[in-house]
Length: 198
Ligand code: ADP
Image 1 (cartoon, protein in one colour):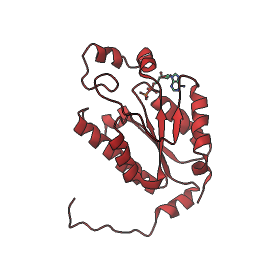
Image 2 (cartoon, rainbow, N blue to C red):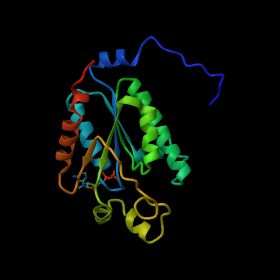
Image 3 (cartoon, protein in one colour):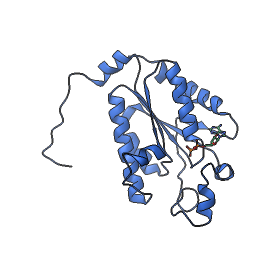
């Protein structure tokens, strides 16, 4: 970091923005294997929050990789930078008073820990725990088949590790519950943050 930089404190603070928006900002960080259901649940969750009058933004894996992070691949180094940038963006959006939902595989514990460090007390971790067998059976994008055929390098769950979250705020089992039930579960378990309007 450049040591000639100075942080400026602005008069319109995060809590003033939260107060104006009538909500508490937070980042709901969804992690899980490809095909686990992160995007599907994130989308349904955002619709539910929108209907409740909440101001939200959804950062989704492929979409962010097609824009902000289009210069990043799937090497360890690029995966780390992918998550770092997303966490910094989520933090900015939290500072703007928004409820942020992120849907990224985010396979490494260290990266999620780093995201939590960047985002701070507003960070909530949701583990979408769908098994590799079920994800591979769904194979929504045909990526598991391609990875098994050796056509994709470093594919999470097959040729690259997924480190299970140790202490997530919510665990979602999509093999036992439908999409709306999964959303209910998140809303129930994180309810203090959604009810709070500071
Ligand atoms: P990811 O974002 O984790 O890669 P997607 O949301 O793109 O996963 O795909 C998950 C797939 O699993 C979708 O086809 C979705 O319809 C299906 N699915 C089945 N049951 C559920 C559930 N309970 N929650 C979320 N997705 C589910």
